[in-house]
Length: 96
Image (spheres, rainbow, N blue to C red):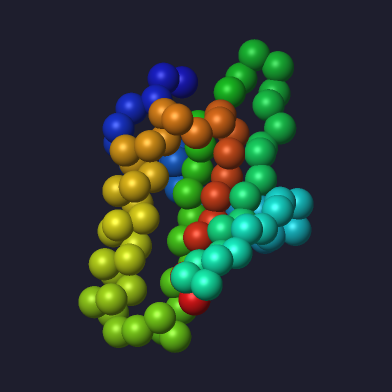
């Protein structure tokens, strides 16, 4: 599947099982501002998977305006840079 600059449902982590798989099988990188959990999805023969993004933003971050602004910014950064990411990469961003 060729990568585009869109952000379709196929490029999102949507279900709880998707998030749990990244948390259980993946690795974590933390900074004072956020935690990033990631894993590389195993490639099937003759099939490649686009990078996928999931956001887990709790109310501790602030009001709805602040949370939604953060999510819009992260989606846009992902959308513009997804061609540079490894195929099959699944990322979950959790702000602190």
